[in-house]
Length: 318
Image 1: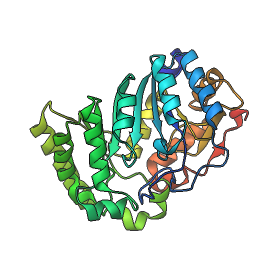
Image 2 (image 1 turned 90 degrees about the vertical axis):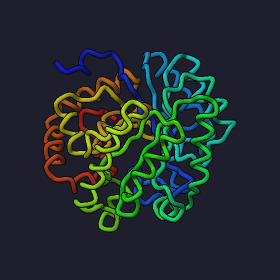
Image 3 (image 1 turned 180 degrees about the horizontal axis):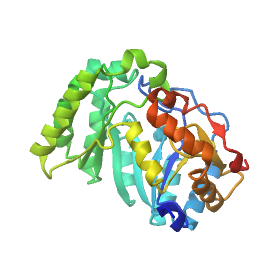
């Protein structure tokens, strides 16, 4: 019996509120961009209903992400409903619309972290990786988070464009008072998969990146956590195969994916309760088709490019 078979509900719900975004990042794993709402995204009423079901099922931790969650009109309503019930929150944002007003509202809630993407330390590289974005706005968002004593987390997605700036971004994260810095190999999913030949760092660049991370981890000691293991999707899938994560990935239209790196949809929260979706998720990790595809995806990283071509499992009953 695995850990998830002993749990009545997920320990974490990762909820993609929308596929819409205010930026068109070249490395985006969710295919998000301005005006790219997923057809049939949950409306405000449906989103609030799901929030109340998360609360009723005593899910302890929810990550609100996208796309860009702050472009969703009901983002704060959802966050405040969850937070008022004691659900721990993580907010994942590019920081372009994160200001003092948003920070102050979130500071009243049980926020475990605000994760802001800093994928460069120079304006030119930032704009190339995040077209339409402003590095100054991202920095201002980091400052707004810390001004109200919210915990700041920084994430860095390495590409051929920006990987040489990782050490500068680590140093920048420390100056902002971030408690954690997240990174790892570029995921071959979504927009990144389509631009793979232009974006994939070389083996030498990755070796240098790991050297930087190991050196920084020694130098930083306890001032900021460096999280970069598992380093690749394949490593992550291997861990999931051995012990499936107690998480639920909810797409903007309410459907539930087995894992971000595979295309399988196992439930639909418009038609099923969260408890039923959790049962379907646990069943998916016993499904022979899923397990075989996990093995294939571990052996062949190019298969991750299919992850957003969603396929409904027979057991899903959706």
